[in-house]
Length: 607
Image (cartoon, rainbow, N blue to C red; front, side):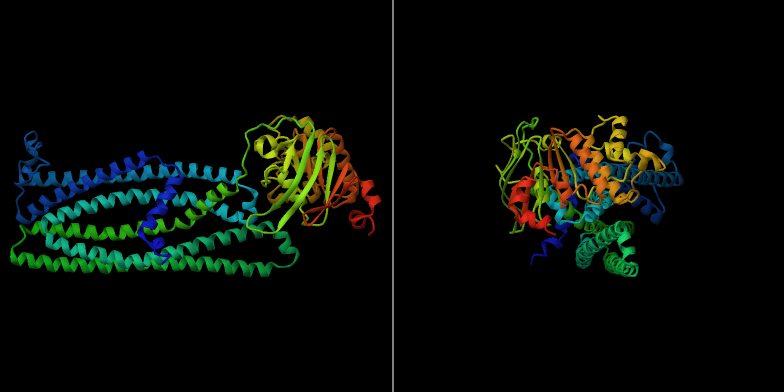
């Protein structure tokens, strides 16, 4: 019962309208396309109007009636030579029919070209909207969803939009033409028209059942294609792991299975699509035979004015029945859009749910410090809290270290301070003001950070290190910071120096160099607060000490939040907060915690 609305023609049209609506197409475009469709239909009617006297004249051997037709009534008195003889009249009819056909097809070409232009513009608009959504959507969404699915969506959009615009243009033209043709056919013979009117929906009903299955198959194909693309992307990024564990054969077999599934789903969809053609042909042939029998009967009963009218009727009937195939093709094109439309809507819905609300106040310079007050936090759709009643302060100019077992909530606290996760109201305060009242940009512009993943873009070292500085940092400042972090020789040894691209997943730099480049980027940026989440991991003891000395030098009078598992790092902190299972177990200075000989002491100093 629940599947019927999704399998209807209304659902197909709704998917197309939603996709076009999301791309912000203006109503005047549809008005323009409709006007073009009316012109095409009018010229098609003119073609029939010219074909009728041509056939009639050829059958009866005389074209004398042509100059009295409405289409030539105003031309004949001014250019009588066009109708002076039977041959000239015949030639005039043929030329007129050719000109009308040429003009009609020129308009159709222009309409399709215009549709492509609109599809290009709509692709730009929709991709920009989606990318903007990706930029503002909360981190929760990326924690729970596949990045590869979003990537696949961006690839599919231009193909689907072009198909939808083409569908709309042809759909409007066909609706008008079928309506006009039915009226002409009804005028010629309502009895024969009734035969076509019965066969037309019967064929459409049969093919509709196949299209329903095509829609289901298309959704499976789209999902399988997205899964295979995601698997391929993930494998390429994790190739060193595959090779290191000698899992090449396993991954080859796994990819082959995914590839086979995707190709099989595509084949099944194509098989259903190819089945429609023969069904349409059988239906059209059946209708043509029925019309032919009816025409024979009408000729014998003399209820039709002329054979030429029957010829025109037969021609129009075939055009109408041919429209069944066109409508089916259009529906198949629309059906392919539904899975992507659902994904796009899910992304926009997720933004509405997960977007971090931005306040209206600009965050001023830090004067007193940051306070976490009874902070409790749970991830969406999960009952277990990762933070429970956490309270501590970070005074301005001080360094606070967060320590504790993996999963104790340390990174969650840093994400909340960066406003990547939304905190409950009145739980995090900056200079006594709820952080939620400040605009996101003003808060983040006061903070620099180094995450444990040390993410770098696949661009040059220069661009990576200057990211977030808005061009306010000179090359001398970059080189000075490189020198302090012992990166000058490393960069000098690279072929293109600062212009060297780091590669996908930073494959052209080592783990330690990647960490140091992330630190350069953070320290070059103007900031009042520095977050270092496992920033010294993968560094040897000497390099770690050099980094910490540089950080302390660069962050004088700055407020620093350290997250680390290394005792050598946290010893530099003014205050240490020990977390376990989302609760603060102990906090104090290093000396105080050592003197207490509690959990911190047992964890770090008794092993």
